[in-house]
Image (cartoon, rainbow, N blue to C red; front, side):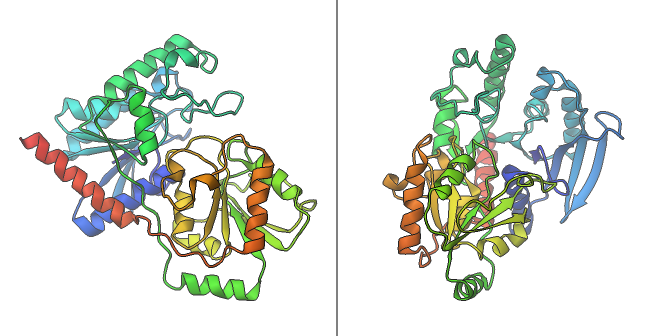
Length: 400
């Protein structure tokens, strides 16, 4: 399994998915999984390989230099040669190219050259967008559907370099035996943009389901404190909707509620210079949590705010909340809406004024949002089971 990060050096939602699926494949389906990931350490020689292991899964980390050319960010011959060496040594039955920015497309070509099939998973828009998330230089969502590289001239530094990247990535993606997407929205946009049209399947991400005793803890907290509590894990950026959230709360004329913010940064810097004393209600910032401790956060909130101002491919936090009977107020943000638990008319359009969010906050405060039924969402075990089916189908097709 190739992923830009992997335990013991983990960061980001795609890494969470990669790690949890790998563990479930080993635990439930008898797989032997080896991970390949990236690191960037100045005290080590460029492209040296470090071997690590956690939870029974070996991880080979390729040390990439901080300074690399534009082309090396998506097709790095030095990385590709290391990947080819590892594939030759490990002799895997299949390569899962999971989230490979910084690693580059060489994982696909290295595997193909040795006759090893590849399942490629697309988690964001790295394959069709030079900026990875379709967020323009002015921090607004691009909105192209489909993406046409000719329309990207105002965003990229060098159009012809970006066009070469765009064309090459589409060519490489066509070599994968299967391509998976976490949502129908992501698949439809990528395929409409020329990424191996007709070959993609939706492979929905799983989440950590609530642990034993979660709902009792949730009920006990609500008994101790009757105030409705809102939660936000997106960080203080415009693209995650923080300015919108701040304006909506600033306009409230009541303070009988709590807001819990999560600092998802590695160094606790996200909310360091932010003040909340002029906002109504009681505000609290909590440090980032590991997957195994997420119940500590979710037991404290009643409503999750998800105000993303771009079209995302999935939305783990939304599913985590819904699995715990927590209400969600969210924008119409692509694949994040496909759970079906929020009525279409309740989805707040991207770019809408703060008044729409304020109205939903006030509605939640008036009606209460505490007696929600937990929504049935896929677990990581479910996701691994689905991937096992993809692997079996892929290998069976190749034998025909």
